Structure formats: structure tokens, C-alpha cells
Image (cartoon, rainbow, N blue to C red; front, side):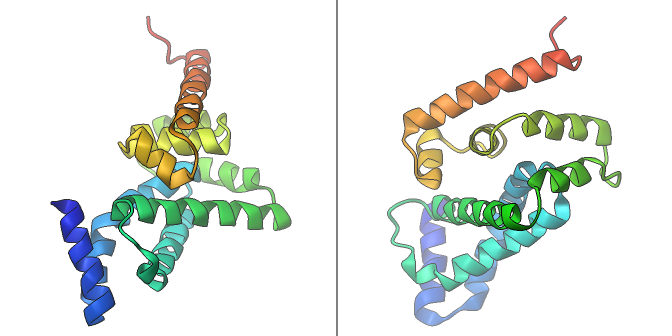
Amino acid sequence: MSQLNDLSLVAQVLVLKNTKAFDQLVQKYQSPIRRFFLHLTCGDRELSDDLAQDTFIKAYTNLASFRNLSNFSTWLYRIAYNVFYDYIRSRKETADLETREIDAMNCTEQENIGQKMDIYRSLKVLKAVERTCITLFFMEDISIDKIAGIMGIPAGTVKSHLSRGKEKLAIYLKQNGYGRN
């Protein structure tokens, strides 16, 4: 039903030029997309908001290319994934991404700062593709097949990244006092 509603809203934007229909899509997916970026940027809220905004701008300008071969949400997450990796590529030319991540971890305006910092530190030990898979699967509750579609990789590769990521997280968290007693 949700996919049908998304298709209806997309059609309203494309056929009737109804921008309020796109506003409804933004309202529906804004929080999940921002949360996705928040985890990928290790807690940098400002950067997450900027990347989310870029994602929705690209989605709006490329809405005619949506062919309903997957769910609208999968298509949108694919755009978000590409926006993030475009950002990383551009940052490599000007500055190291680690600097931005360290700044994000030192931000003190978040509630439960200790636990959030531990989560972001643990995510930082992962490779970018592992962090993306872990974030989409465990934090956004997206299926392995949809993650494969978002990232453009086989489902088996997603499973491998999830397995390696979970192993690395378990080791890191155990070393930092989160082991089972």
C-alpha cells in the first residue's frame, strides 16, 4: 500500500506538476534519510542535513528517471548512497574525512553523548561499505536484497560485508567494555 501511495505521489509530481505531492514524499522519507547519513558521517548532524538536502534535490530533478523497477524508497536510498560517495570523493581532494568524523565525535550538544560516541567510534572501525551495509540493515531495517539494489552489488557481497562488519563491531565493543558478563 505504501509503495502504491509513493507511486501516486510521483505521478502527481510528474503529470500534474504538483510540488505538494513531492513535499509529502520528503516528509515521509526525510527522517530515515537523515538518520542514514547521521550514521554514515559518524554523528555529524550538519553534514547529514546537507547531504539529505542534496539527496532530495537530486531526487526531484531526476524524478522522471524513476521507472518503478524497485520501490521508491530503494531508488531514494540509492541516490543517497551516491550523494554520500560523491561527497567522500570530493573530500579526498580537499581534506581527510577522518577530520570531519573526529569533529563529529567531539560534538557535545547531543543527548546521551557517551553512548552515541561509542556507537560512532565503533562504526568508524568499519570500512565505508561495511558501515553502509550495517547502517541500512540494522538501523534502517532494509532487507539484504534491497541493500544490494541500493549499493549495486550482489546480495552475497552484502552478506559478506554484514558478517565482517558485525565481527569487527563485536571485537571493538568487547574491547571497550560492552562484552557479555
